[in-house]
Length: 227
Figure 1 (cartoon, rainbow, N blue to C red):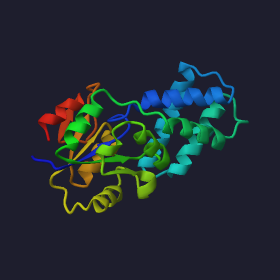
Figure 2 (cartoon, rainbow, N blue to C red):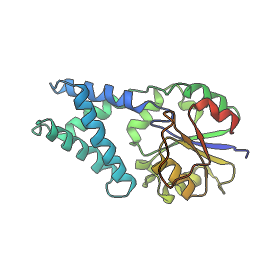
Figure 3 (cartoon, rainbow, N blue to C red):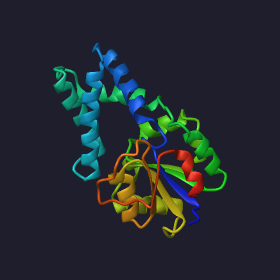
Figure 4 (cartoon, rainbow, N blue to C red):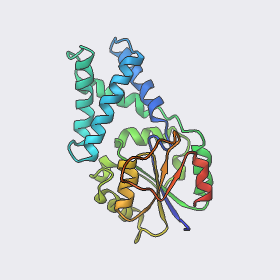
């Protein structure tokens, strides 16, 4: 199959979100006089993950995700007197200035940008994701960065992909490839819209779901043999 357009997920595919998230969380905690630890990060990471899963299922809005994750986190560390809105604002400010790329991401993106149309599809927040890509060094490679906040829908909803296709002027799914690390969001969403998909699975985790990607890779450089 020859592809001319590649839709990349952001976090966990191009951006090392865990490292950036940890750095932003620890900085925010110190800002408010709290002592960060591996345990507090693991707690927040688990809470945040579940909130974004609820967004995928249409149970929460992006605004509700942002505030409820920190309301729950601050309650868990017995610091409920601190406003989750203030904590969230400081966290987003710090995260927007942090862009740690996945190994090989810049190389493959710059290579493919010479011959393909590239765009980013992300359930992340508009201001945060745009800020991160501005400091990433690869923003110039993409025709668009489509966040669920700006689109009005979240992956895996078909409405999300429909909006992206309209913005890019794509009339059909042929020649388009979705690349992402989430089976439930990127791969299920792409497949549900009729798009070929490539599951980025660097840990080679066994796929025990009913979602079946068109391709599976463990290193981004493997895209060269696909596209």
